[in-house]
Length: 160
Length: 160
Length: 160
Image (cartoon, rainbow over all chains, first blue to last red; front, side, top):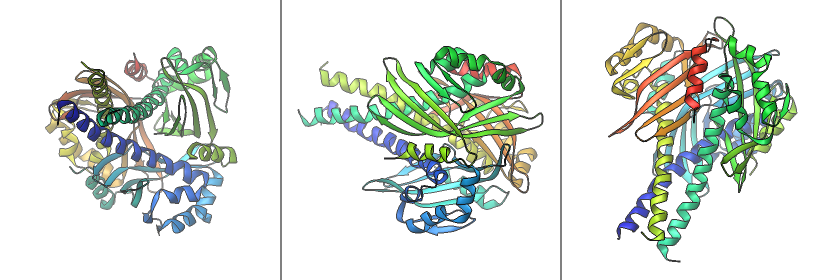
């Protein structure tokens, strides 16, 4: 292999890592707009076919179940009164075709005059690379109410 | 074209996409600090010469008008009492020399003791690549108060 | 130098800039999970050996001092009652082996039922590239309470 070939091979590896980080940012930045617009099919399509969303207030497995949560009365009540599901910039660890992203999830709800912070959770995204890109195999939320499980989730997410 | 030339050409296209995503993150991350420091010229320079900012509570076209909003009594009152214009990590779609970014805009205001969430909006950024980089051709905010227009804005932003 | 060699050299410079931006995002996205999980050693490791954290409510220099803040009664009280230290997507300027990142820091605290926004600060991260990657040489928070020092911090961060 020539020096130039080696340089190109090294660049390909670096660009792949950047592509993964950028794609996972895009995936996570899609959830809020999908959920808050009530676009259940789009929200569900972010998961793998058999993906799990364990939101602590409820758990759903598979795209139809996740779409059903978005279409359900509780979620529809939230979005028709005004809300924002905000995910913060995540920490990401990629290991081949799997990845873990760790961030905070915030639910802001309109209270008529201003907004109230309904929930702030520690959020873990276990991701899998499939032929059409990254999908969520398992997403877990833990309410930051002082319980040790939320601290454990945050700590696991940034282990090296 | 040799294999190596083809590999370099492919890398150039991938790096261009990453550069665009990174540059748009930087653009959006500049607005809050410019607005909250009262640096009207910097805030206005993020837009194209004839760019529009339709913030629902008001609409301004062109850099002088946008700078005037920052210099105006309402905005100055906010920043001198303490506030933060926070934009969340956006979803971005690039199409040649135009792009759409979609995220949430939050206005946190100091209420003496802590902070209150004054507004949470769905925010759409229609961007244009100019010779000196990306600029905002049109930015639209829609308050998340349950009105269908905010849901529509979020949905349009993540359409594939 | 051939055209192909020149193209590879240019790509290397572009990828280096992207790597720096991506690495600084990762660094900043590590602070919240480290602080909110009480992992004092991890939080402190984000700083240089002699790094400074001037949080306005207190200032600490060196990793042992920063770890001590995390292990201290005030911080432990916060995390055992439930809190989130959220850093927003930063604006970043890299200049060789130093960089400045500017964003907002938010402290959300569980108030039993929902969450309250305890503090929103303008946050400046002065970063240094060391052999094992980027570290924080100096982090400064300024409360957004209308004081000019916070506006000055935000303005300095986005100067070109």
